Amino acid sequence: MGSLAVVITVSDRSAAGARADTAGPLAVTALREAGWECSDARVVADGADSVETALRAALDDGARLIVTTGGTGVAARDETPEGTDRVIERALDGIPEELRRRGVAEKPAGMLSRGRAGVAARALIVNLPGSPAAVASGMPVILSVAAHVVHQLDGGDH
Image: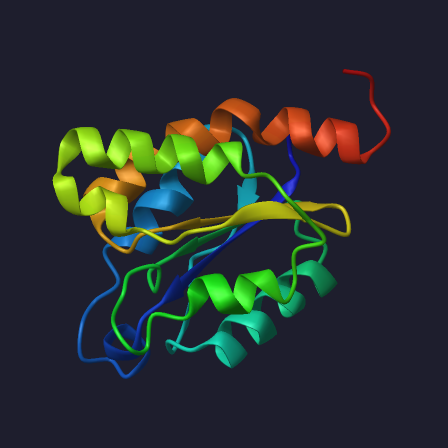
């Protein structure tokens, strides 16, 4: 594959160095194992502005797939979906629907994830919850369609 992927961990505690990022590295490993070029996860604080800024920076860097972890719940600072909505041009509702379906099968709180997915410029953007379990179950969903989305964004056939 060789396309550039970026993982963005959204967490006040991880950004402040108070907690290690455990979810982002799982996403990075999954992407690398699937053949994507991916640096270590970028860590940003919670909030719509920081998420929007990080997503736009990843797009400017040429990312074709951007996966965020964290900030998708109902806490006051969980604004990853709001920041993502500012960037995506076309929503792909089926991806977060499937992520939530799988999440609920694992634990009822999975239905509380407000993650988004969509395309912007030439990239697929997907929000995952911040738990390592959610990343482990969500990455196969993302990887099952990511290459196809990128191919279509490049003008490829269905």
